[in-house]
Amino acid sequence: MELTDKVALITGGNSGIGHATALRFAQAGARVVIAARNAERAQATMQAIHAQGGTAHVVACDVRDAAQCEHAVSATLDACQRL
Image (cartoon, rainbow, N blue to C red; front, side, top):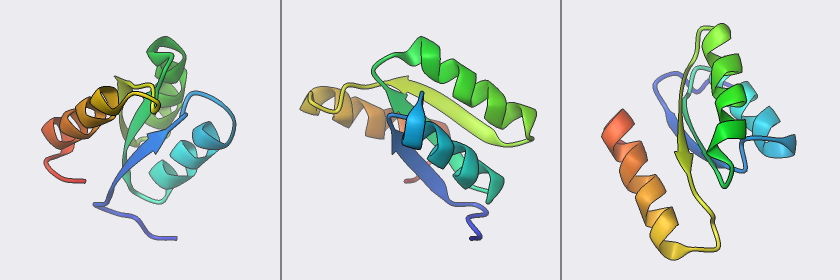
């Protein structure tokens, strides 16, 4: 899978499938934005991506709240200029 210069907004990226997806997308070259309710725990995923030479950002987001989802998209656009 080749994702160089792509941007991925991944929900639940602080654990489980979301964490694994974030790592794999970063390994494939994507710039990853990790959206998670627990932004502190998501920092560990971001640090793992950075340690592999990837680019990642974290945004706090509860996907049950539309306003927080809109904020996550806005934060992604601010950080990466596209989604």
